[in-house]
Image 1 (tube, rainbow, N blue to C red):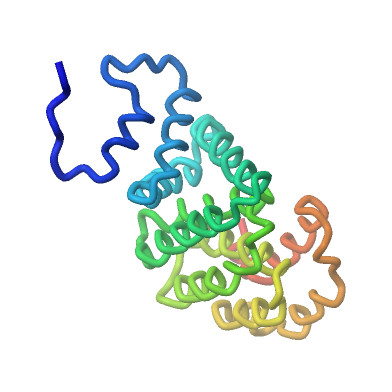
Image 2: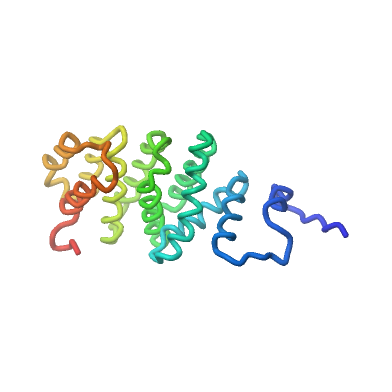
Length: 225
């Protein structure tokens, strides 16, 4: 018997080719995540899947972070290996759109910042990082200059700025930092010395002392945990 037509579902045939008919036999998290990675290749559903990934990879639950980040990073690395940079740019576009649509969201912004830190630390976006770094800088600056922010978000923003310092505009990034933190504004000379004293081609681990230095400047000693 032929399945009845389901109205108003975009790319229905593509979904049917990805998701098996019920009863679904999904016994492991990996099998579930692998299905979602395939769904993300569909233009209609990419952004919705990314929104879910932001909440999962950006969470504070280690098991959830590891379970979701592994297949997502693998998918991104596959795009790079196959030179599918156009598709990779669509992913980064939707990530930035999710960020923009949730500016000043007290609930989601910590997840977005954590998600971006995991993503940028992985190196999966290195091949397209320059093309997205300016937009990302603008979004972070918009978020952090609009009203008071919790201490944890301030600390998370430093981590993201450290990633941006590896891009094309380290001085602009550092000057942005002085805009959002009175503590940093009082240490501008120390801040602007950082680009000339740092080899930004070093890996993420080697740059951790720079992150620590920025954190110490960024967060007043009375607030630093």
